[in-house]
Length: 262
Image 1 (cartoon, rainbow, N blue to C red):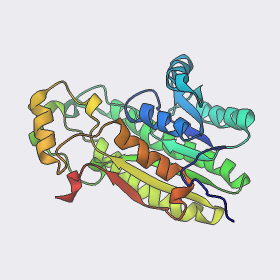
Image 2: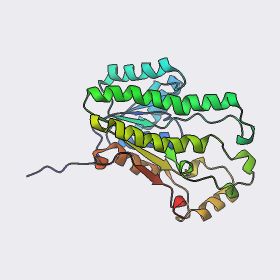
Image 3: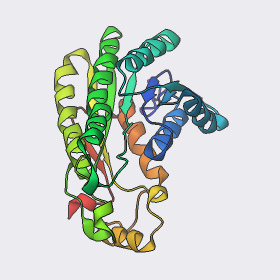
Image 4: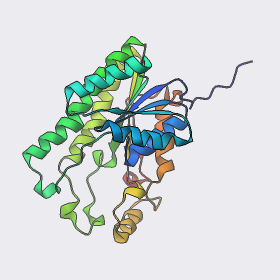
């Protein structure tokens, strides 16, 4: 008689989540811990990473805070080396961290754009490459890139009272590139039993502007008539990280309440 296997279990899996201290990353880390994974939560500041890890892990599970600066090659190499030294392997990498512009899109300059692309593009590529080399040594792995609906469609500025403060030149470029990068990584690394998928998300209620007009307009534009909540983020990330998605690679899983279905 065959034993029942939990396809969604992450027991024994070592999982790196970059940018796990806020927004989507926080809830994804919580879900991965709940599913049994050993989660490596990263942030530029190790003390902050560990404090958030302690908060998430209060109810049990294994989650640890590590330092990572994606603009620093040595920091990338050190993270991978430390995780291998401490845990012996890396099963899953979640590329979630993102540097957020410090100025409105209308004012953004070359210096800020260079930093954005160093962290959000070059850093992701270098970390993915380094982790993939370790995954090859252990016979496979799983890479999950966090995208956005604005990698698929243009911004609807009609939901904002002040469009000049809320549009972006860089974000759609980066997130659209993330979807294409996912497909390339998936095809290049498939022969090493390394999967790669993208998870494209829409707005999370708790991070929405404190603006009832914005919220109303957003919900009116969304077929399900609401923003995402924490649970809407948890299920998809566990699915992609687990064996439940074992025949899935190069895909873009869209979680947007139907925003892009119109």
